[in-house]
Image 1 (tube, rainbow, N blue to C red):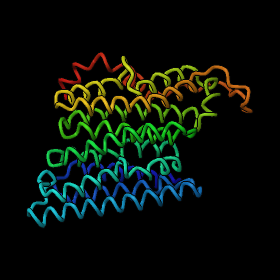
Image 2: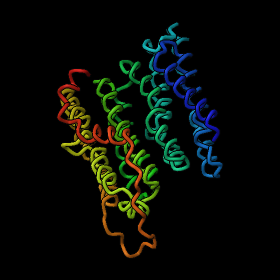
Image 3: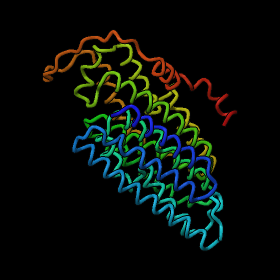
Image 4: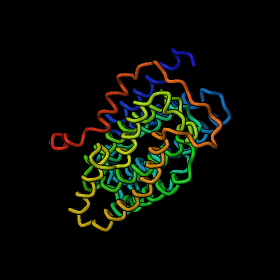
Length: 346
């Protein structure tokens, strides 16, 4: 892709995200979401492969439907209350429609079918943007309207997302699809605590974004797209693969790594809110996603490829690891001891 065109699309993404997260009026928020959708489409379809074009089409149709629902929800609320302010969403029907629209934007169950397919059809760098930056504007809208949303509906969506995200990722061999189901599972954790402590939702999102960025950038460096390639990638950059192992375990939420922090705080908060059964259920469902993280981690650090693979071992690269990956990996793995400081900021 032409560098100037690429720059325009990235700038449009930043513009759309900034407009949405800084707006108070529903029309401005909707405009930002639309700019974002239109800016990411060329980045998804830039390889001109049929799968990429299919992914871009699916993404466009889903996001257009979700944006229409956001607009419909805000207009219904304005019709009944006379308010266009995002924080003044009080009409029950509007709240239900908005929850469905944002669930569709984010890829929460049962509106999750588009996300694995779109991620699979996109390049790794675009997949990274879809998994992290593109989720920030909808998360901001959820955060701003959290006091008006239906707790029962969000809890059901959250538990279904944690269950299906873990269950459907078990049988995958394509790493981008595994990361897509991992994203759906994490969204479940964010949604379940949104009503009770919205700041925890944002903390969970930020830490998830850091860990996912680390994984995507590492995979992009080693040029790995599926498990069979991951098995023989250890010869290319052994130290990077070792850190990828730790980042994957952190993404799974194992102590004493960074990923344990949001899970621990969410379970604590749910217990305080007399939701111990929901906390127990979502904790048990996260064991499903733990299985495929362990599978990925095993493939990452296996030092002897099975005899059935026909791949030759790859040459070790002399290219030094980028500073960004080094910093992100450190944050993804070693942030748990700093949790008291993080809690004072949050």
